[in-house]
Image (cartoon, rainbow, N blue to C red; front, side, top):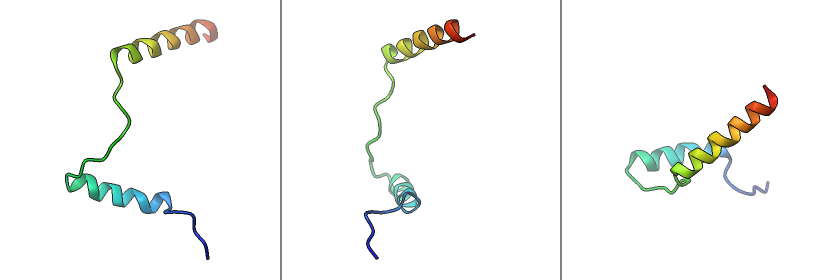
Length: 51
């Protein structure tokens, strides 16, 4: 049997263990104020168009 890589259900516990041990794992960068503003503006435009 050939597998391409770990299943997501196998990876999750491993990552939880790493985080619990204090190991630094990279994740997505946080939202900047400009990201929040752009999202809010896009949401306002969508609501105005679709409400």
